[in-house]
Image (tube, rainbow, N blue to C red; front, top):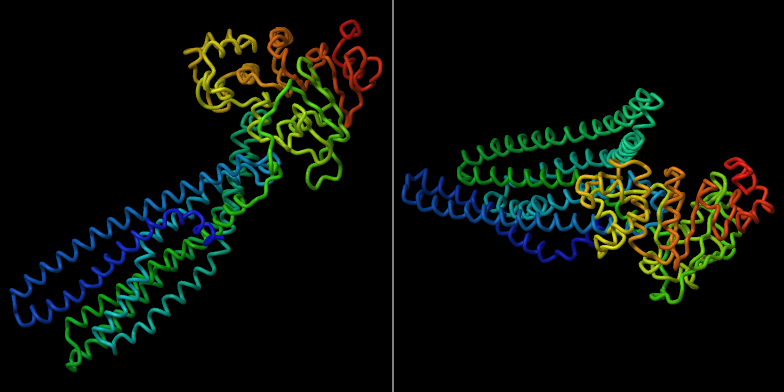
Length: 577
């Protein structure tokens, strides 16, 4: 998976990678040339006492060093650009893929896991790419070039490399092989700690209300300790690598000096050549060390790449049509024909044989006990889920045949839990229509009964909204969400229990102001309060996912015991009549 991911997202930057390779090659050649110059200075300058030769070759050495530094800086620059561009593209691909998921797909992965994959997992692979471009590329060139130059200095002494290099690679490889499963466990435990943190921060009020801080602290400590123990195991293995490298490097250096000293004493080797060989030996072993150090990151990056590819390659449960409808004409309408929905793996269907027709200018209400499938039914219209049987028809066309953007543009959804984004009142309202004027925003706020409190906020339309709308009350969030849907001016309004946080007087005023605004649109209201839907043109009553009644308030009071029971629990006999 790691190779496939790198091939897919690094291919557009092959030109940058070729530049990095070329610059690194020149840098390594300059680095390998320096010990040879140093050997010549010792053998032909220092020992004979030739000062002119020392100055002349010293100047050459400075020039080669300047070339080495300049090309190294350039290689790091272009390598970093390629790595950063790679990370940006992978994050963008993950973001767009996740935004195409249905609610069911997001739930299957879990929001904490998706956040970890888009951030931490991408960072792990990006670091590997960066170090590959800046360090690993130079390693094989240095090893091959260093071996050639070492043999050129003294072939017999070069036999040391036959022992030291395999010993170093084998010992480091053994450590890395033990690290791979630990990295896989580490990413899972990072997911877990993100999940616990997300739940505790989001549910902070509930935790405090039920005095569960000690239990939640214990739960976090358990997740934190699990991650810590895994990190410690990985850290211990990583800590073994540098001592191994230093041991092999020092032992090889001692052996080179010992054997090389005997050869110099026997007149078979020059002192400068021995020093140059020692430099090449260190360069080769250091390159092996750098390669293995980058290789140490590869297992974790490989695990992260698997998790990234899992998201990118997941087949969405909501598939676009092969030849989608790109234009809808005529008045707005909504029809459900024999609709059934069952969650994957569930034994029973959430919805069974639902039939409903709603036309423009008509208000349709859905009511039922908790868990009867009201919200699920509403979510089938904008394709948050796809019906497992039957058809959901918008403007005469099955929603599965309509282009997604077109379908969503026809719908104004106010969800059960209204969400506001960080920004201003205006930016949240213009989320539905970026071209809306201030006058249109104020009109939508007036209809949604939000004009009064917005006009009293500092900055009015430019008043700041915190993340999730945490600086406004639940009722204010609902009214702003309703205003946002009104700004869009869609053909179908879907209100999912969107009036529950409003007092009865505000609810009544809002519904009265809303009526002329939705005259040419289909309006579907999911509600728990009978008073909210009592004047609806038709009311669909659900019980255990099945239709048990459909008609007006008066009709259902007489013919639907379930509805009559709901009404009796909320209204007096006089109010119901």
